[in-house]
Length: 326
Image (cartoon, helix red, strand yellow):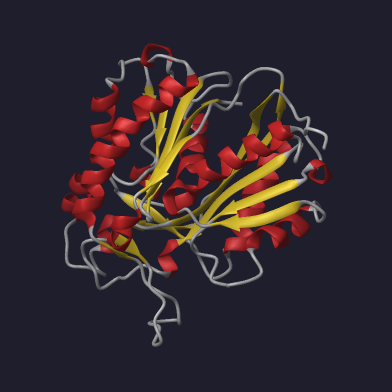
């Protein structure tokens, strides 16, 4: 049997993003739940979030973000031979969104599949793309994180309803002669599976979709301690020190969790920290690529910078790696 021969390394060639058109302020949110705009912002850092319209389907958002990423990567759609979509809100048991997306983009013969790793989904998918390119199973991969969490938000739960939002982010990954994606550090804690879940029942609510349920306090504690400690390991696995890090892009779940990770990492002041949650809300698998897009748009993200990305969420699962921004 012949050993597979792939690229020595992989790197991200381009990012793309789609933000839904509807902006929902904290003031509007407080017409739905009993709260105050100030309380929501203090607890989470969120001042507004994006919700998709009826026309802004998961497929529409994913295709738009993907086309932008492909254009920025400077490749043709038919060069993509792997499509991985990370999502928990493609409400169809089968087929997955990825094969349909590949066909819509003009990459119809690509290997294509969905993964469900919640808010860590983008980092999981990126790790898979990196590994498959380095083994020779793929040459150019499209990694997408896309969610419509507003469809499965439990609006009667005033402790979580203001958190969730919609959007899509994409990245094209290709071969490289130099390291562009570091080793992934990932893991799970299935014993705590029930603290974030969307159960299927015999009597579905609302439009027939399961609703997200979350016990916020244990999630906050786990992310702020256990996952925060894993960020140090992510730097170690990549062979860089915290002083060499230039950008930190955690899953946009809560600004207080981000602050806890900053303390654990002992981030120097020169490191740029993504705070996209303020205007976007929590978009689960789409969170990290959307945050990267904002850094570029605001002039805080630049090609060649060394960045640490880390996702964490339902499962409980986490994943993260060091990347070089395209």
